[in-house]
Length: 431
Length: 165
Image (cartoon, rainbow over all chains, first blue to last red):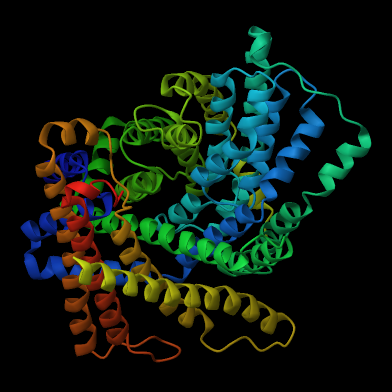
């Protein structure tokens, strides 16, 4: 246990220096393992882990779903999503911010990344919100928080990573994320309503739109709906595996991107592939580094020590989950989502299994906690993503704007803790 | 430096072309496999293993591209104050760890390729040799190491400081 804690301390130190997370975990993991089992055993373990990760068939969903999101992003479907949101909600006070959340939810349904969702929707939604005189804190807060829906509403890259690490069915995890994702959307919209009720000047109403325009704008979002139904419907009905769904979804995204006939098509397609290849490489490198580190933590007996500790303290499942959630929140202040998942889950997996905790339910809880990490200081990667799109808005204003949404996340977390059926009902109906 | 830049550009173009081709193939192969299974009742033999091999090459090729642009995921909490305080020394330390990580990855993959080659380990369905794949991946990791050196040199040049960000 002490060895593992020293390993964690060294890892944090190196990471704080600015060393890439992937290499920091790899180097500390190999060095730690070598101290216990010798250099040769350590090299063999690390080489085997790396090869196993990069040829893992289940993980091929990651580049394919990222590719699907890149195609959809370049097809400018985000504008249509926002337009539809505005047509239906724009006339209400705070309606543009609610449209933003709705459009983020729509974009999340075809994109598994919260950063991509936040970046894309910031470019689309920020100009109209400024035109209507929305408070910067409300508009940027709704964008940063709306972006986090990218990892809750399936398909979701962190959910796929969790599925592999926890050896759970990725398809079931995706389906389990649908209801909590919808709840989060409603809670975010409610949060906006409460904010504009308290400060009406922060979100003035937009213009009314005719029913004809409402229907027309909604009809334009059919590619997103079609892809979502195809991908999730296929998984839900057991027609194809998540990897096959990802391949078909990417091909569908490719077709939509082609149909939109963007300018300089060749360049657009190369950008899509480059984005997918590089983002996937980043995720995989963090994953294999963290798994090598997790092997070191395992070999020094930390997971077993934790199981014994939990047994001696006689902690119930809820206390265990809350303790892990707290650790994830603390790590979320330093690490990004994938790093947290691959560092924390393997360590606590034996404890969770010993306590007979449903790992699909726990997966959804962890994803909400990770979402909170994306918008809480000091890292809050979504906040920085929004800031990069609107550099003139002070960082403090964005963080001030996301605070109410962190409370919404907390409410969602408590709801899912109290009512596991919210996450487990739909997967239970799967074939 | 010019020779390094030329080689870097050449390798980047090649890696992106290979990764794009393989990722496209993965996308088409999964879709066609589903079609063949349901419509023709004849799934593509070994499709999942082909995807596994392609995935590995895509990831390592991507890693080299990430190293070229110095786009690794880092904890940037103390980056600004450390850089202000230690300047080039700080950049040098970070660049050293970047290079060490890439070189370590290359060594691990070469070592493992030798090991799986020794036992002639192959994929289950297609019987493709894992050692060959591991050596290809080690080659790509070596390119990533070269890209890390290039990124270090770019950072070290005062006139172009930060251009690798």
